[in-house]
View (cartoon, rainbow, N blue to C red):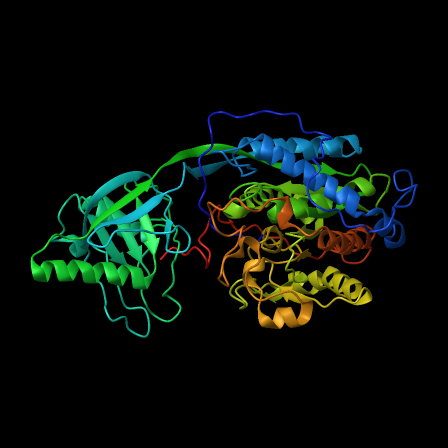
Length: 554
């Protein structure tokens, strides 16, 4: 799913290793898509009319069952997992590599390093006194990527602006002066605003704080429970050795009022508890699986990708579904000698900031990059409460619904070719569609170096609007996990572990996979866009990890 900086969980030191190749656990319903032609395995599926009937629910669901079995066989902290840097992800990569090798592709596994953080157990945030309360994770607070335990008095930092102004004006905790009268050992209460969250935490830690609570600023759009990235003034990731909690404006303001009332009455200060445990590995291995067709023009490469990594567990919707989509298409095209060389890639680290795709494009030579004519990205293809999303460089961001990035015409114009193919296909089967930006998907990494791209996604049930219900049916807001909010759900919230096989609709998976197969086989034989030699390719430095709107830096 479009990239978000997510909180990670602890990687268990005890790993249960189970052979899963060929394993398909009998889990969940299978929707019939009609029987596949008997000769799918032997015929040359080089046209939509041949390929699409061979894309069946049964085959797609078998891959989904195998990914679930892999997650179940490799639990982390007691929960099924396929997160990057964890055994279930490596087993997923091995599963894909094995099947693609058997299908006759040239397979390589590209290894890269990344910064791994995972929570151990469920973080705790509570008020001991004067109003005892255990705050519910995700609904009332979110833990920052930090490690520590403290039970201590609360003290607000300087610079808090209450009532908040119509626009952001607080600079609470941004300078050492905001902690001039701070008593060492206490938990610092800090308001959002002006500087990176990591700067606030570093200042608090330097003043002797044993923990930090950062509450939202209170301006329009800055009131709810937030989750933030802990980065310093230079944009570098930090992992504080004191626990850090993020919460809403109302909760933070109530705690501040309790403190002020205690000071005025001369009574005991509010006492809080914060417990966050985790593991940090700044040099963890992660993997991209690359499978290339033996045939096709090596000077005109079509990349077909999906991210293989999960977030917060099994990651069956996000993104075993997209991974299964391209895996089945690749298998069904094994006998095809395409005009353009096919390069199927399963990327790691998408959920952590497009790590795998950024590493891949940044390590291409200029010649290698210039030979990639197009990218197609499958990013979530089985959402029960679905939208039919088509990637368009001029589209809106999935979450913010604004255009956050523009691309040069050489990228945009060519990207519309596969985009329009998808639209034509959905029109042909009577489905509406909407356009989304590639920003936050692995397609963005290709657009960013001048390579045109499109792709498909079915969205997250957390974020479906009434307008989308009018287009696609279903319901407004959340379906995954039954969380009563517009912005929640299995794939967005930690510590729920509910993005399992049952969180996918096999019927949606089937029609989206057929649509993606239609795009793939058409672009495999494209002799116009793919053979163009005047597409300028450039190589800006892509961030290995950056804050998103959902998990901001400040």
